[in-house]
Length: 338
Image (cartoon, rainbow, N blue to C red; front, side, top):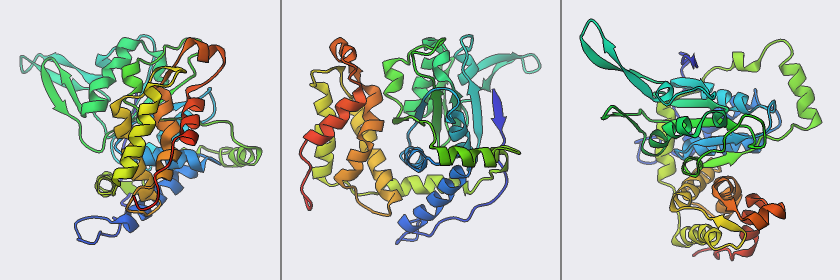
């Protein structure tokens, strides 16, 4: 485990909303663009991946980054964490990691002659879990309560986690040696899953230049406060979602539950995460309302990792991402104005 101490570089708060109580969409865009630009100084040629990571942050969600080793999964997680002036803890998941290594433990204090709680690394604003699927399912499950309820219960006592709270986990594909598949309950708690993919030749050449002398991560300084992120989350919560768009999200998720190529469809939590992410996605475009295009853009990263294909679909090499993409193409889109 390692700790990234928060830096002390102040960032200006965004413009206030119409009621003067907090930042409006203009202020959100200003702060979000600063965070995005800071992350892109480290992650070359992946603007869509960076935007999705920022969307999950503003949607009060958790992010799962899955790909082969060496493509920048941990670099993206640490760059997003360091761009915000807040508490950050990193956990390297290994087969011998215990649940108490994450949540904390009650230890006996000889001087006070009583047990006192020693908080684990989960007590931070942003928790970076590196290679989460190298730990046992028992240890992985230690994150279930904190990811869903923003709290930790140890020895009968419940401790609240300070907002904003986000888990950014990386994992290698399950086909790689020494990995355990994530439990379905934990996959369902991740708002979105993204894959980094290999950079294009131009971005890889630029990476050789920027990473040649020193890591750009070492030069990255915070461009926003934790208070800024809390304010932006409040803006996202106020985004308008019309009844027609809500019904469209429900129809899309419901279709996964009856699809013949899936033995496990998406849960009601998936619907909630899809709408929350669509609100954040619209806010990043400086719109105060959600359109069906926002739902369509996010359908695959938000839904696919929650689905389990049938044995026949696996034999035909049909991935859940393809099923969701087919559903997006097939389902009717709400008409404008509804």
